[in-house]
Image 1 (cartoon, rainbow, N blue to C red):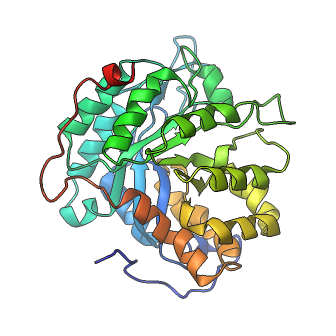
Image 2: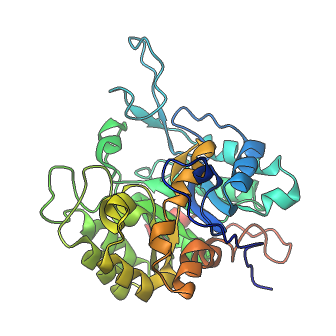
Length: 351
């Protein structure tokens, strides 16, 4: 039987600033983009997540850690808790996936079924990264629903992270894309379409498109539609619409700054984005993109109501839960109760 939300609330949209905003959207949702650890790899934990999901009218959530950890330098008097807290670097932190998997496994089965965890704790410019994915997939075969969020081109975070700049068409990711396609695992990636200093055209879009062309059997989710802080490009909605038209293997999520900057600036839905959303609603989902601050689930998701109110019932249901369930829920954990096998030597297959 296909999944449907357990209930649809008919509450009116609360006013901005009202305490009712803490209760979240008036529609039951799947949060399709939620980090359960912060940049020092700490988490409030699984019970707190479930509690705040219930308070915020969130039926299910797509969850993941963070592939990087912020460094606390010897000369910094205050411990940083965010990648922009100071100018210290970040480094890749593979244990984030274990934190997520163990957090999920510690929950009762009925709560585990509400979470779609993804693998993200690998260095995307390391050709050994595929081995991390294989190990985690074998170690927790009943947990994972996909791969991501991979942090590739990412404005200031790219500059802060040790090592070579990550990008969607890096050859270290090719065996991971092949692995994901083989097991029908969706891949959520953050790839800015351009650089902070280049707002007149999308200088990094070709990197994403190269990956989409090379791996047509792999399902990709383009996080935030490629937008980030101070990252923008002319005719943004036309660029996103072309990607959806041209590449059937890509979906997008509306989360973080794309919503407030382009889709619904100053709480006024943009007509172009409404038309795009109606046309491609089966390939669009919504997310809070919170970083372990579960108490903010309500306000983050409630802000989408003003946009959802302008959509058809079908498009609204697609964005709220149907698209996310189709992407992440179809291939969770085990298949018919049997542990999924691991194919060997993916890096040799792609080399």
